[in-house]
Length: 349
Image (cartoon, rainbow, N blue to C red; front, side, top):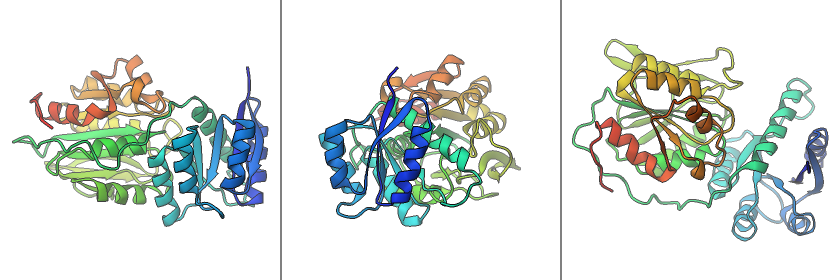
């Protein structure tokens, strides 16, 4: 079986060396070349035709976003962004995902040995997933049309969404089409600390609903979407008649914190038939068992279709468990969510 060939683009010689060591230590992949900037990378892509590209965010001679936009337009290929944990870096990384990057990985604190093995495993896993990913055409920056609000949307209704690889753009495309009077939405997206706040702010600028990073103990309200903070599990709970959010740092679930299963299990327990559960693109199986619990609690459950997933991992596992009531293309998920929240009432665009 041929190896996954990788090209690393980074202006830091130390990072290029680290990425080379990580890739070449894996039996199924090979670093075929490295480049200090996009202009050198452009020639190396022509020469070596790599299967996966890792791309730094901020580089000399050409901005990483500008290079990515040109690359995805002229020679689409799986790209993993390499980003620093800064507010500006996270915003740029989210823009890169919008432009068509498959995934991103944060830069390590070089010189620290603790956690380096896990970091190497993370990069290797992301490269393997990227090599198999289904490239999606970058979506239009404006939604196709905001769905019309239905006459009655009870504040007791809510929607729970889980996603991983490819999920930031899938979530954006779902939320952009929702009217301001939508029911409350709880979202767990696999994402490290430092990125979820920027992710929520970005969505809030694009959507009619209010999108924010979730806070422990806050009341869940209609018209709001709450993003689980990186490194914290998010659960739904009750305080009297009201829904509330509970955040905690308990053990990883399915190797993740936040975990989609943690969210879905709590929604099954406290919302039951008043909820809709949606599992979107992502690698692994996190969320599949939780979606099944939601279905068993009489919630309506949706899995994103294979044809519209970047990585058909989490939805596939949910479908195999018979956890999904319906399998829906990404562009139709917003409408299906609201239709079932409103007891199957038809909606118009």
